[in-house]
Length: 258
Image 1 (tube, rainbow, N blue to C red):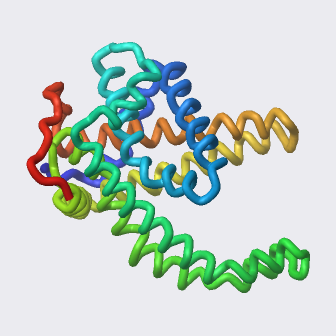
Image 2 (cartoon, rainbow, N blue to C red; image 1 turned 45 degrees about the vertical axis):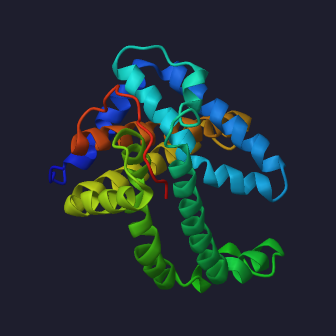
């Protein structure tokens, strides 16, 4: 693990975009297929949304394998999306997914406690959005984001790849991911902030150029899956910076599973 300068965060984004541009159609097709599967899962009451959350790291491996293949000039196919399911690391990836769901549930619960009543009032048109914004306790939201959201994001970012390629157990992968990012926290911060700003700028530019019409809605609908792929491409480049290019050696099953 190498400690990296803050500017490396921007480098990950540039490298991720360059990786995406090698096969934009294939990678876009892959994320659209993934989004379609998630929509199908969400139709199933209760179980569907839970399964979608828990399987997030499993599908993440499919994307990472796709990016690895793109680097090696291999054509992206839908089959690669399910590589995580065929891996001996599947039980550990599902365990990681359960922890991911728990962290997301905690964050959503906190946001609901802070915004629930205000959102209902806006929906019922009892207060205007401007008044609602003044009632939101942004200090509390920011505090909980720092306490739960930021550490959880740092622990999760590299964990699926460490479980799959480095054959780590869940706890060890979360530990290594968190402290790897912590040692180069400025690079991680630049990466996240630049990504959010770029996405917001693109959304605003589209709104100004296309206006409020059906075309803008269609472009926005396509923008979200493409943005997801670009973020994951950058995350793959982040992993490579710390741990080197992933090996082709098949994952060996561990004797014990967390």
